[in-house]
Length: 299
Image 1 (cartoon, rainbow, N blue to C red):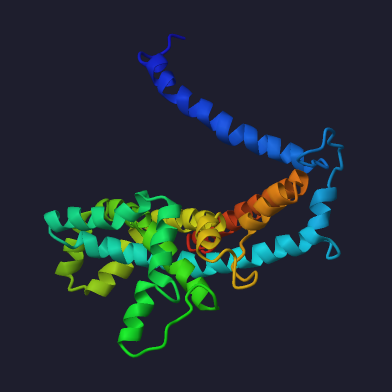
Image 2 (image 1 turned 90 degrees about the vertical axis):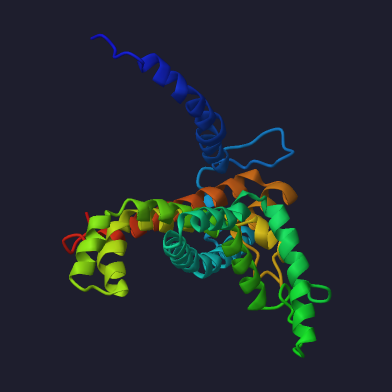
């Protein structure tokens, strides 16, 4: 069969992405799985096969990696619970607000909200450290000037979590907002016009037209926000160093510690692969739950 015109050109556009995908995602994942089945000391010459030993050690309460894994996992899970709902709700609220503005203001605020997302996490951490430092931070200076006691934002709970979550929301909310803005632009204006003729209120338009129309995009935002929050590392590492104590020490910090401080790549890879499996299961659960409303059962 004769190939359609332009198929070779289309293939050329795909090849760079395919090469990058294989080099920087697929091969490292496969290699990480391979390492997780070995006793892989970073400086050792030989790496004997140990099967599931590294995975079983994660669930053995007598091992150090068990404590590391579940401490990091619990702290990461807390961050996911604290950060994902506001990332979705505030992102949607900002999108609705920006979408209701005149065109010139819409472009300005859409850009203003998205700019922090283009900044690296190290810069974000420096900015928020400058704002939230207990002794010399700008926020505490204002609180002191107003007659309040300074707040130890980064050294006590729950302020440490509040600081990390607020910094994360400020940094990443622009991405979710842009996705919601694009989704809102695809909702037909005829639906709103018909609802206005029927006398529907703004709340009724939101709950009966807007939210059902962007349900699939909302699911996408929930899943991507959950995955991104599970991968949190830079904010707690740079802002609190995992403190106070180990209360903000997330799982990626534990994996890096196991891999490069204790030089146990086998255990670290097992922790990373287990974390990835948990993320996949949670994403599948979110997808199933979102489909329950379709005909009363999951598909």
